[in-house]
Length: 593
Ligand SMILES: Nc1ncnc2c1ncn2[C@@H]1O[C@H](COP(=O)(O)OP(=O)(O)OP(=O)(O)O)[C@@H](O)[C@H]1O
Image (cartoon, rainbow, N blue to C red):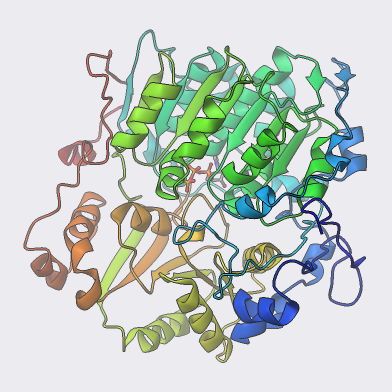
């Protein structure tokens, strides 16, 4: 069977199987038994299958990506106001996706999006790739559902004004003070209001005018502070304002995200802010049917959100070119580097079809040397902005660290969950560990699901939906879920296993305490295993106004590991750039600058 012939062989839609979520194990992937054996989660771990492929999917919950052909043709519903200002020009290559090209290339690349431990993500333990031809549920068109996706800002939102903002670069446009000053296109502005946003966050205040002014940008801001809207709003607005004819296979904005789930989230945000405009927004990501996604994009899209591996599949088959690309966003660029995607990023950015006059926007939590080098390569006369301490933890998260050795972790976790299990993400280091823990908890009173790189994509999305809706109280996750995910009801993050680097710690705990809400994080520090993290952890705790436990201070040798702006690359390496500090400064924050 060619890679192209990945059409589901089952029609789906019966029993538990949702109509639009067609999952089938291909003839050339592992057989079903093998698949089950390796996939972890529902089948192997024995944890609640009720959560898998439930009615949520049937309703087309918002986790899904990809349009169907029909919706692609119609564009977004409504389309009032700006609809139809521009005609759509169909290119000649609309059906080219139909030709068979199975040559193993796709097989090699597929799924290489989002697993920090193994770039060959969807491989099972025996080295065979486990596969499904997954067609994600259609995204919702229900207005209420679309606009209810965000987290309502919390009591600490106004404290954002005290976070120091540093901007450098030539002739940096002035930051905005409110959304009226942003000169957003009417329909985008309306969608901002419908989203319940009243005041822009600091990163939005700086980024929106910079992007609107046509500048390249490298931006860094703390978790949960609205980076997604910071790039989406000006991009969508500009695409509407300076509209260009849409050609098939030639997206006008390309947003690259390291993980599939983050790509889906950005896709949903883009649909929200572009709601009722004529903009077509599509997504391509690994772990799903290539053919299906190709059908989705053959109607053309203004904005394409993608994971790097899948995007390159499309590009190298010439189904997507960058001739019309006016904006390229590399979101969580540091994570893409961690995952070994620097070559992919380079291939995308230097692709022969790349429109010379494009803007490049890089968002990253840290700017280590390699990111700075890439920025130097990809960005042109860019503006560099940092909000708060680069790589610092969000101080709205109350952080506790307990000394717990590996034999006592389970009982400590049970103790914590008995207090309140609702909305708890438990991070573990390995996929196998995630399966074990999920199986174990499923035997308890806590409905549990899991997400990690060995689970099928359909299972991963279902797990997130079940957790979002509260059907599953506990989500066991590997670092695949550490970044970017914006889930309303995350009350508590537990580091059952601490990560091996402080950046991951900061991102993990940043799943809670978002947009000014309070959050809580508890970490199990195993001295036999986590010693190397001690110093950085001490500095992170101290830097976010947390109590540092005595045992940790002692283990760290009394000092930190040089956690500073410069260690996290928060300094504009171009030096000499005109540095502007444009927010009221907060002395405490500046102390550890
Ligand atoms: N101006 C605003 N007012 C109120 N809420 C906002 C505003 N901007 C963004 N939000 C909400 O804040 C939440 C976090 O935003 P977002 O996911 O973009 O953060 P982020 O900075 O990308 O976080 P991370 O670093 O974890 O990826 C979302 O639910 C979003 O809807």
